[in-house]
Image (cartoon, rainbow, N blue to C red; front, side):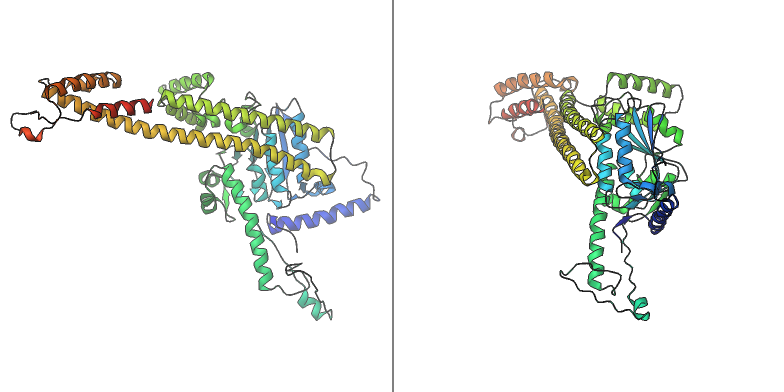
Length: 492
């Protein structure tokens, strides 16, 4: 029996073999491994810290198993700290080729990667496999790039319960399991698996799957239901199909991934990658910088000349179009919300920097690792809560503005019709109201209403056409002007 595994059965067997190989190597060297130097996971390429995550994933440090293709979560976190502290590293690329691995430790490591991304942007790439636990780690990056032949996904959890009771019985061995506690050591190898034990472990697997699924849904900005229906349930996707379902952002080579990571080096390090307005993926904040607006002008000129534009440029054009249709009130609200969000993000970044610095200068024993991660997760949760609260308030304000705009436009049309009708009743042609701006229209409505009421007192009648019975043409109530004026004030 083994713990939950976010990977394939083959990857688990590979770990078992690596454990034995590492033990054999140590024996062959007389028990001493001091002279053997472990290779670094970090390589710096033109300002990009490339962290190689290759092979099955295990809890803690893989130790000498790294020589046999296994990597530990502690090894990955150590490399992230090294990259975060290296002044030559401006952004980080996770180069992943992993079938997944142990569940224990993977959530903490994913959260740690997200914290480091508060300081330096993180991108993920694969030219091989980014499966199960390997994708779980990649989901912490701001952008995921894959080659066209890579395998992506396999979002799920497995547990294998092996029992030898039949074979041991044939060998003349009798095992008696005595337990205190209904669920203690259910599914052990020395007794037949009961329906109750199977149900118990199925429930555990589903609980872990829910955590994995929620991480994917959050990072890919989709609902949990959509992630489950289209991305998860253990499905594996090749290259373009992974892009199509939303697991990956784009196809590209390793060089493309490095170049994209390099393009993020000028971002503000005090802001999370997804909220920096100088990045194309941050354009959804709908408050573009002067630098971005200048680029929009260049892109439009290129399109006019017949040039093709990238997906990032198209996203920037879309954001510019949305910003151009915003009212001054919406822009002001978005700016205020963005400033509040940036302030919360800056506080999280400062906390992450302090924690990462402490982790590298005073390394804690393995038993204390969870304390560090718990602290970092707490700081991130606080900052994220503030950001979410601000975004919720912004959404509510935008909804209210939209409702007010719809009401405002509708009432203006009613006012135009009312002015037109009163002008006709007063002997005019009724067409002047169509060309009036909102403020001018309200002033004209007030003027015409006063003339109309003086000529046709309330309770009287007005004939707008010679063939219409006078009794059917009643003057509109004076209170209509107050209603329109009220809605105009609210919309402002």
